[in-house]
Image (cartoon, rainbow, N blue to C red):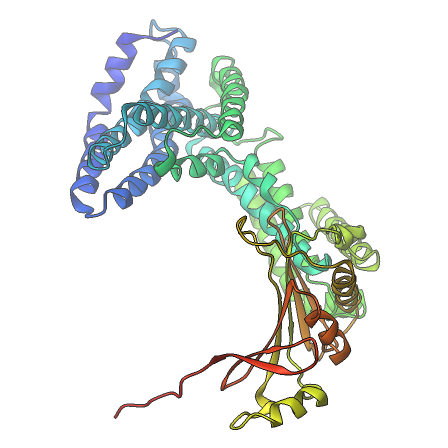
Length: 487
């Protein structure tokens, strides 16, 4: 399965490439005053090399003359494939080992941590090389192979953007968990492993398992693509369904989905939206047709192109319309409002003036302009085990829920103007939810919040910070110093 002779040939024929890679690693080691920064840079270069080196080593597969020559040498295709992958992985990996060795000595990293981290990065190198080589062989020529690597590598990024835009546009509160998208890309997973430098002894089981799964699956796909590959494919248009056709349709659909997701509270009807976005749709259609020109390698136009584009546009617009009318398919209610361990922060701007009762209290304080005061509510949950733990009351939780529901209703109004407050909830599971609220917090509710020992009702103005007490009085917390200007 591994050919020493072919490996030696690759080592000799690619010696200038290897010298260039080692030179970059050497200069990076010398040029960085911060060993950690140098290591991160080398990790980035290692990742880049897993893209570039396979394109160089396996370029013969896309050359009609070269592929006949290579596939006729007395080395089996299996051996050529395995040897080529090992060469690519080591060429990207060894410079990182050199840089990491310098870092390990400088930071006194133990031998166990040293070995564990190098094993993780070795898994990264082989996985990315196998993954990128598989994508490179989807095309039938060098240009198409490079396009396939770029298109499929960027697909998770575009998918993440589409999910984020949908969440911001149609889910009141946001907070949609997009962490699963990271597992759709071995590059995302590998990046996380690179930044585990200070905890090299820790093995992230989920990331390692995901990379191993990618390595196994794409090794099989690469084996079939290379060993069973017809020589006649070299230099021909890439017509497989998973090449240009799938890539073009996926990207067009995702971009149309992102465009349609901007059909939100600013538009009353789909007609107004389409009228405003017509130029954007037209530009995307032109790019869509141009992609087919590249795919066919000739000027190409068919009645199917506009039909498919219009159908996809209507489908995504219909989906967005349903998402708005159904209040985000109910996803705006996904937060567990019984979570007392979360962190609640409620801001109220009082654009029309703070409550009269608070104004009267401020009048009792000299040099304070009540009109410049805005409101800040913060639920403080004491996590110090040596101190009594404060927990928000059920009444306060119900009061926050009232404002959260008000924010949800406000989010799905056709026109949102005059926002006076906003509620941020940092849940105990780490998600942040944001709700814009139309009304300011009432004085009665302020007093209810102030009576809860877990809640600090803070009033801030140009002179300092004040706390609203349960009896309605105001207590000075911090007095701001006057600004001094020097000539």
